Length: 142
Image 1: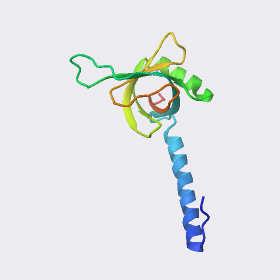
Image 2: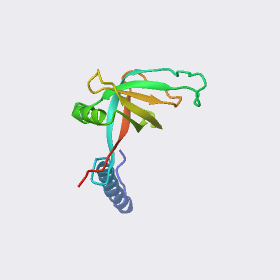
Image 3: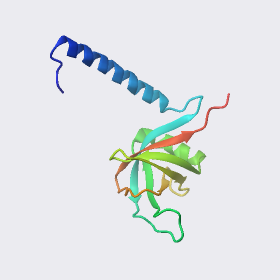
Image 4: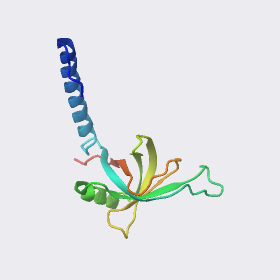
């Protein structure tokens, strides 16, 4: 990392550092469930991914799927609970390349904490890939 060389650069670096810190705190707070609803953001590991499946007379070119589970041990209970309370729900996800996609995450009832992510984008998810899931949550009832 480059060190700031002059006073004006140091001031800029200091302000930039504070701005980035505030930005990350806002993102962290925005990604947690709260009274106004929102989403639960967590990482999932791909256990199995598919090539494109062509369906006759479908309105999309191909459908793909990935079987996913928690990537981090601390997210295991969160993902399992979300899957239990959302049998099948629209979600968004970001791949390791940083591309954003939509899909449907469905609970696999006989496999604890695992979900079936179905999507229609020409991106192949491979075993051991990590995707960032954005899971919708409902607002808390007062």
